[in-house]
Amino acid sequence: MGHNQVWNLVDPPDGVRPIECKWIYKKKKDMDGNVHVYKARLVTKGFRQVQGIDYDETFSPVAMLKSIWIILAIVVYFDYEIWQMDVKTAFLNGNLEEDVYMIQPEGFVDPNNARKICKLKKSIYGLKQASRSWNIRFDEVVKGFGFCQNEEEPCVYKKESGSIVVFLILYVDDILLIGNDIPMSQSIKTSLNNSFL
Image (cartoon, rainbow, N blue to C red; front, side):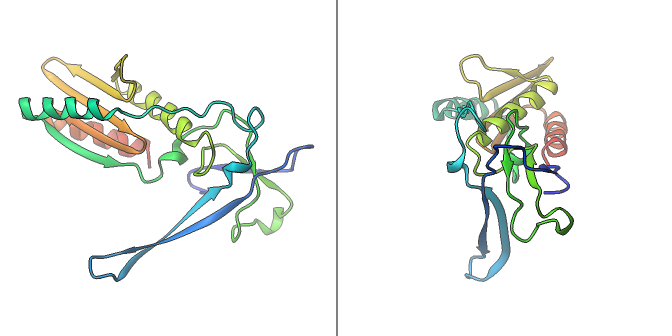
């Protein structure tokens, strides 16, 4: 959380009730049932948020299945390359517009600032506006790479340069990258990786 700069510790403002958080633990098993990865994710108790105070808008579009099928038909017809990418910490990339306060997470309480609370700078899993914040950030970044958003389907983007064509499809935190030029697609993959650590 520190390297992503998700929050700052602040003195509790008057009248603010910080939302709680908790750790979610998961074991990833291999095909034989042996645990090979232990995962932990910090989530807020977003059900305690109050509309108009610590969130406003929550809507976030996702690509329609028919749009994905159409793009896949284009891939097959023109023999384009296709890659699937998963953004592991997608919601931590979203910038918050609202002032949201959270208690310090268990096991990570700063002993020198135990009475302070976290003022969230980034979206975090569990917040009502987390998906929306991530979607807005993704939109800003890919448009910065020169992609144009489809007017009818806001989660489909296209970039053209001469005869080179590249499509991006976003479905929550999964990205389909489709194109007819491998070097251009590799460049976009690298840029996406650098933008969304």
